[in-house]
Length: 410
Image 1 (cartoon, helix red, strand yellow):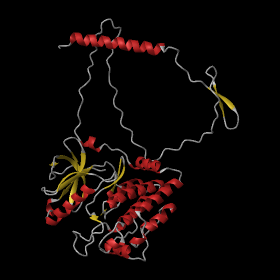
Image 2 (cartoon, rainbow, N blue to C red; image 1 turned 60 degrees about the vertical axis):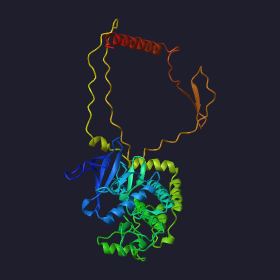
Image 3 (tube, rainbow, N blue to C red; image 1 turned 90 degrees about the vertical axis):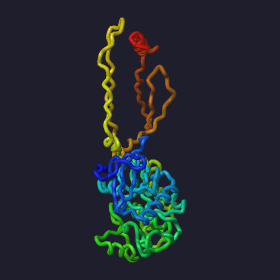
Image 4 (tube, rainbow, N blue to C red; image 1 turned 90 degrees about the horizontal axis):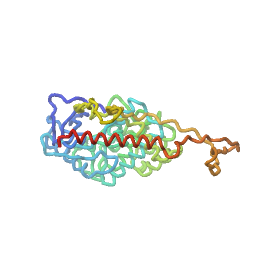
């Protein structure tokens, strides 16, 4: 995730969170990377002072209340908020990683195995949201963060309670992302049902698999016409054949024709298992493929220089030599590869007779041939070399303690 430096006009602290940089911004607000007094990183969202009025405060307060009710492993958790502050702010869990839109732009579409894993993970997360009588209403690739522990859904600013006709938007006003919204949402229908999130998830899965959304147009009016026209089918080009039936169902024009989220999970599982993997294996491969730690916080915080180690050798009584211990430099943390490692070659099964400790262990292959397996070398009985090293270490340690005690001021 790209972190821009703070501008001279940005606050340096909000609600006890020290602000370290800019994560992103929109028409209504700015999102900062913050850190709590105890060192907990957070995404701190602030409403711009220029747009703060009674309606935006009410909408912001609704977002805070919705985030308080949402729970789940795949939802960015609310940490703290103050909708009455000036300016209003909220802090959510910080997830270090690219969003799906930027990841596909940099690395291209995901393989079908990983797309199916992503679809199953997000469908399960949305099902938990729906159990809490909420609909997200603005699911899109930019609202799916690919963190080091797997994908998570963010930005519930447009979420509403399911089966509710109450809305803060004016009549005939459409709020959301047109390229990912279903026809009923684009028409401004009320009330909206969980089927809107099924459609949006289909758009996200299609984007992950092909690099494009169901409808694309340079003109917003043309785009709305494509979305609401029942005779204009979504563009599924580039999607793997095994995912086309599921995508077709999820992007159905009529809400009642779309599958339930539980069915989406099962169809994604079928795609995964057809390729010889378990769902948990596919999930781990998805995380390995998409998450690469960038240590953003370490680069933003001031560097603390440790005091140098003493270099003067200590004179040990009756010791032949005195050495100075130097700690090895810490090696950089390896970054997980973006591709799966090759599978190990298959090995013929072997039948092993009872081992005879006096002779090399024979191995019988499947074709009946035998070969002697070399017996690994073993240390001499009694471990005399290791005992000698251990004894010398204890003597040296004891002498160090005696020298320290003789020169200590207390």
